[in-house]
Image (cartoon, rainbow, N blue to C red; front, side, top):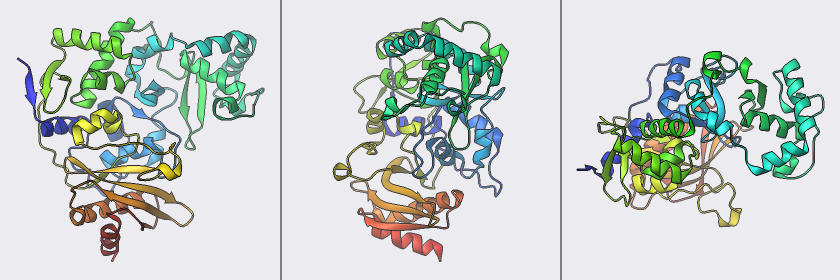
Length: 401
């Protein structure tokens, strides 16, 4: 007989799995590397993104869980011999180095456009690899012959960058980021610990089974498509493997209130009401809300990233962060770090339908001030857009007195 979960219990499992159920540390000393390492182990992957309107998502995700920390500590955890590595986990991602063998099957795959490029540029690719071997680590711009090109999007990438990305995808080289988000490459054998790099890794089905189990651990509860999405696994194969894992008892099927498809948890998953009372801003690329269908099922919250939506068609703004309060997503804010004026700009503030705007405003203001302080900004300026804006403006002013 399938276990049953209420909608609230499913939310609580999800929040606990994502490290959003407990209060942030209250120490005046920012959290250190050990807490960051523990968080990554819990999440399994943190998405990387170049968008720096407020702060890059890889910086915001730990802040949402742990509060203030030194970004330099995050950067120092990836690179040669370190505990994190970068690869295509959920898009470009940071991952614990022990997961490296589980992606060797992905490294062995190359899409058709990569194969066609390699055939047309085989001699140049060999020259790039030889230079990296001799001079690495290198960024694409540091190659002696980067072969820069004009164009838009993919067409603007230099041949040197494409060559390095090809070698990165197939595992020949590894990479990490500088503080300004530039990717630096070197031979995998000089970056990944030898005991991790050795061997071919599990066969593809077993590697994907293990990744699905890690998905279940980091999601708390999800249907087969949710589990597949966490590490972007092929959905048809994932459904088959999830069924096998449930048959073996390594996943537990659950019936969740309001879900059309069965959910799955790890054996022994226990439900606890969240203890976090302060409001929490979430990056648009936060792993709690990656899959929009799951976000709707869990929180009754429809979310769309509008960065690529033409401005006249945007509903809420360019860079919108949801606000978690208690166990609900109750509001969203169009934010920007105005680094020149040293202010966090709230261009739009919107409560969810039926939300108590006056009750949301004070914890929301406290979180915005907390974020601005961590970012080194001097204050928060609230604009006029959105039904929550007038309440928020008063709350920010009251807390700044």
